[in-house]
Image 1 (tube, rainbow, N blue to C red):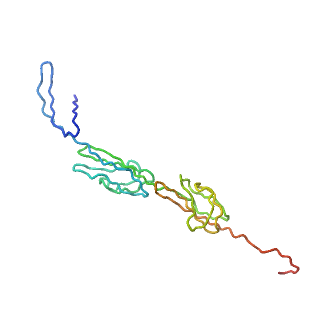
Image 2: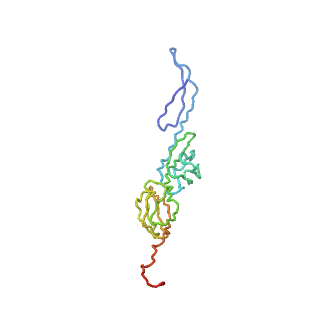
Length: 219
């Protein structure tokens, strides 16, 4: 049969024995059974991390005597923990968005776990292929990204952008020759951008001069 033993908080264990009892009295005691209570370790809580890169460092509390630790990737493959058994390690190959790591702390065979979320706030953004046009207007061909906006690259041409938040906005009044535009987004302080170049090769309006009326066969 099973006997449940409850120990007080922070109890380290002790000896127990059993003794039968019926209407005739008590039976002999069993031999002592030594019970050692192993305390469940408490991993240091790790706050979420926001980065603008594909690598960062994670740090938790140092290991006490008898403890071991192990980092694992719960979500965010192909993230790699460079020192998986070290409380302080570099994590590389972070995917864009959320990456979740688990720190498992083990003491005398008793495990405890904590998770940390690492948010790589770089955004994949594409302004579209460069264009060559023979007109003063065209449409952008960017990929749609929430909260992204267009702007003119400093010192690179001009244009009137009809809708700065539209990936396919019309742009008019292009300068002749080279015009550059930036499609960018700011996510939690991380600015991701891409640039598109629009070459306007429309020639100047030709001018042949005033009409003439002559009374000879040359002028």
